[in-house]
Image 1 (cartoon, rainbow, N blue to C red):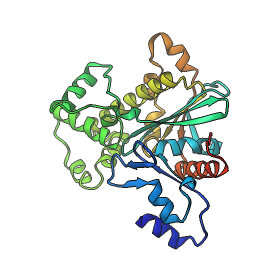
Image 2 (image 1 turned 60 degrees about the vertical axis):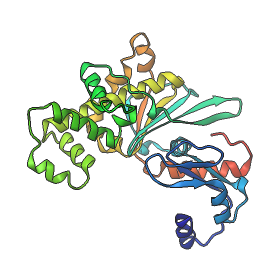
Image 3 (image 1 turned 45 degrees about the vertical axis):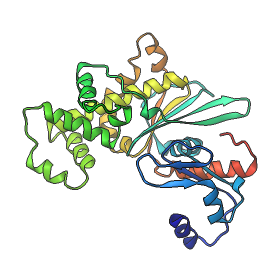
Image 4 (image 1 turned 90 degrees about the vertical axis):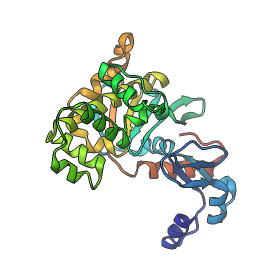
Length: 293
């Protein structure tokens, strides 16, 4: 509740509704962040905020991001695949950051409805011999190898360390020094600038995996209205995403490649998308018991 207390100390107004997005599956208004030790409970939040339980919601963070998509303008988006898309079609959101989050939006009798997903924890499916080696390397201790473990900040580290292990080239001293700070950022910058061939290859492999899983999600939810890339990684590696590896993997879907090629893909640049979405969800919750997007 320290965060709530800090927020209320800065803002004197009385809240009328609240929605909190958390990275993890939500059950009965409670969740524990998958990559952080932050349990969040809607009942406790309601008590701390002085609100009725019905006015407080805890939702998945990607669900909050998906709620924010309608508030994005052209300046908030960069297109990777310039397809027209289907008016009113389903939307998909996939966000590589600390982990790999997914959500989607469908159209029903009540309009658009947002759905949370934990698809980032689904089994990683290798498409090449190199990716098969990568999966075997990560599964050597019997651990589950999900898409999150190869498509996220930790995923980039895993790919880099695998490639470095199989490479005859030792890590350069300057990169070792830079990795003492933010490891993922150091490898990302070295890869983007092509200062180290292993870091550059690691970035290419992750971009391709990212594109493949985005295409998988598009097919799974029939996201003919568009696929959005959220999270902190996509904007930071935009030059590499634009080189084509992402879209090639996204559209390489065999007999359904033509379908996927007609789906637009956009990178979200607005860092406040989840906050906007949480506010929009809170307003909808306040207006009625069954909010839709």
